[in-house]
Length: 156
Image (cartoon, rainbow, N blue to C red):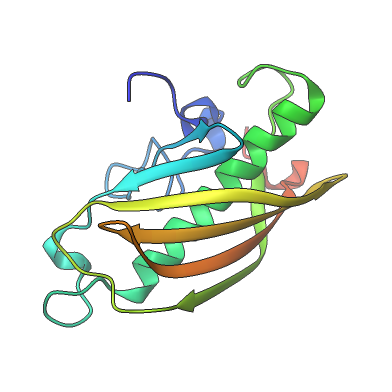
């Protein structure tokens, strides 16, 4: 995709997350985008993301849902405020709750698609339902309760 991802708008001081931090060279660096009223991220697991031969480690699936959910929450906050992504003050969300259901083994060697839908939004909280699919088959679904990051967690 040639447009900026939600995570590309995160301020530098909060861009080191293992799952979505653009400044974490060893992280996953997932990228999330609007797709109508849904959000989407695509990720290709590496061979070392294995659980058992040929299948993705469940922790990776949880990380994809988690970081896609918090990115979706930030984008939703900007939309609700009628603001462009990246305008000040920044919106950055952290996970208050993460629930993942593993529906079937997720194969290695194929791109994964993470889709998010905002199911509730009020005040500093956004709830995002997400799915992870491989070759069009949903392998996991989850829910992220994201809350706006408290200022005391900012390092800058």
